[in-house]
Amino acid sequence: MAGNTFGNIFKVTTFGESHGVAIGCVIDGVPPGIALSPEDIQKDLDRRKPGQSEVTTPRQESDTVEILSGVFEGLTTGTPLALLIRNKDHQSTDYDNIKNVFRPGHADYTFLQKFGLRDHRGGGRSSGRETAARVAAGAVAKKILAVKGIRITAYSLVIAGIKAEHIDLTVIEKNIVRAPDLTAADQMISAIIAARANGDSVGGVIEAVIENIPAGLGDPVFDKLDAKLAHAIMSIGAVKGIEFGAGFAAALTRGSVNNDQITVNNNAVVSRANLAGGIAGGISNGEPVVFRCAVKPTSSISLHQTAATQDLALTDITIKGRHDPCLCPRIVPVVEAMAALVIADCILIQKTIR
Image (cartoon, rainbow, N blue to C red):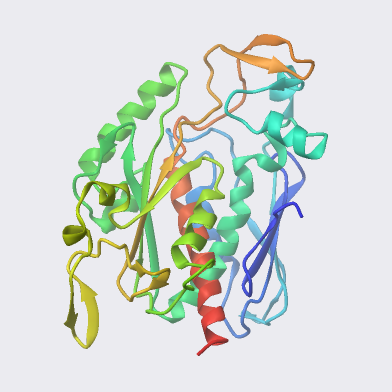
């Protein structure tokens, strides 16, 4: 098992490499009768695609999606849905000088240890480009969730240590870093540009909110909803940590504070401040699910670095190619997609129980 498939009922298998002919996915378990067009998928792919602004990689890919199967006359058929995204602007020669080098912060060494060979062109299968297939699948999952009024919104909460002080969901797509605070967004953009000018990169924190999620999703033991979401989000290559609700701050409080006393409002049980992030005992409680994930600075930077070769000699390298100085703006739709895959799967699982 190489871990290319995600989900139980809504099951997604992605395929392809960064510099191969194409990437894509096959989705099994899509309910029949869901209205679906290429445009439904494309709008999210356009938010993830490279070359969209001055703070992303200049690689130019349209990421145009092709629906190969599973849709007839605009409706899903219930059969496997195959989606294809062709690679067109790959410059593999940029990686010739590091063909036998293990780059700092990348999966070069570990991939070789696992499989015995590796595709050095842009990281191959371990490249962040694989996430385009996830976004395509996530767009389909969002269509299922939309029928139930469930909405997932992610945004850049922190970039380069600069935090959004105000949360206005209406401005997320009105700035190139996808921050919910326009003033903070301007500062974030300046910090990213400065880092790139110095041959460096910056990281950040993405926050996500899942609204109108029903109570009862998830399970009390191994398949807790927060555990499933953590699995999904931590499977994104650049993500190094995740927290729900109060998260790590809960460790600094007392039980009398963190227990978040509950009351009844509009015939529903609700907490005072949703410190649990919408999940109690591994099961959704009907309040918004809130989580944050840490995104590391891009490992591919143009500064001189020390690395090791495949014959275990040390060498100095300068990484060429076209890379994001900050991954946060393009990871936002990936986080939404992975959350959508989990919730759609949980919705379908719940149907088998109740």
